[in-house]
Amino acid sequence: MLIYLTFALALFSFTSMRAGRVLLALYALNLGAQPVAIGALAATFSILPMMLSLQAGKLSDRFGARWLMTLGALGSALGMLIPAAWPTIAAVFVAAALSGLSTTFYNVSLQNLVGLLSKPDSRAKYFSNYSLVLAVSSFLGPLFIGFAIDHFGFSASCLTLTGLSLVPVFLLMARGGALPGGTGVRKQKSAAKTGLRDRSMWRLLATSGLVQSGLDMFQFYMPVYGHSIELSAAAIGIIVAMYSAAAFVVRSVMPYLLRRYSEETVLAYAFYLGAASFVLVPFCKSAELLSVIAFTFGLGMGVGQPITMMMTFSSSAEGRSGEALGLRLTVNHLTRVVGPVMFGWLGSAFGLPSIFWANALLLASGGVVSRRGAKARSEDNG
Image (cartoon, rainbow, N blue to C red; front, side, top):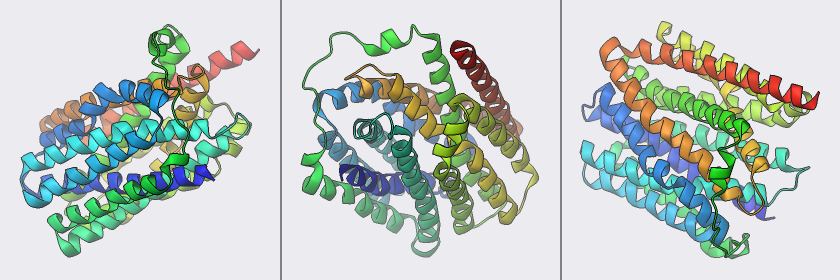
């Protein structure tokens, strides 16, 4: 079935991308980067996706996913070659930019494929299974790269990720022709402009952006915090991977949760659990306690991405699902550009704990927004 090909493409590509983010953050720290530079590095991953995700969604609707994902995989492989050959902070930033460009084409195309290959009665199951694959990727990537860095060094680890990034290229060459094609039609009017007139779309975009901001701050600043308390790269990799292990657990029961509660209600409690986890991070100095916190964080925030993906696809106009998902990713990456830079300056001025506590406030506000969405839906249905 084509859905399994889609899941395989997601597994290899996102394992490489998740590993790459941890690798480049630790590489930059090893080269002497300060928290503000790490914030700028995190933003670099998202500058190109912020500018191009909407257009990538339109291209996915028009031409299909195969060649966009091939281009993305090749860009990711090229990006990892650069810091392997030139071990400088500038090279790390170039690799981050190319990784972001790859993510632009890959993310929207894969999400759109999952929606296109599903039917309304199977959509929650397919998006849940897709999110489980992402959880496995997020678990394997940091875990693998942490041990690789400790045993082989940064340059060899970059070369390893180059090879892993090329696996999807071979899969797309062999089976990509069977994937759904595009409409071949260029849309004259933007669905994004129409959607932004809807208050519920604004609420959905804000919720999605807060989910992404929380996940990014965890992914980038947990390694920075671990480095500050002198944990090994392997220990940091395990901590980051614990989020993904918890996300796998909660996403496996997500269809059951959504049968009992609305999407907004589940998101609200996810935000509150994520906020509580962030509050506790600066009080913990051991890998074991940080692993427990990361697992708790994953039990909450692990449902955020699949639910907002599913809601965006379901609310899109026919033939414009890629554009709607591209709009969602544009807003997500806007938060990924602004948030890390802002929090990087905050951390440099007031210390790393301030980053986690400020993010806890943001996630708590996401819980409030989601609760209001649940109330609005209840009133509409009532």
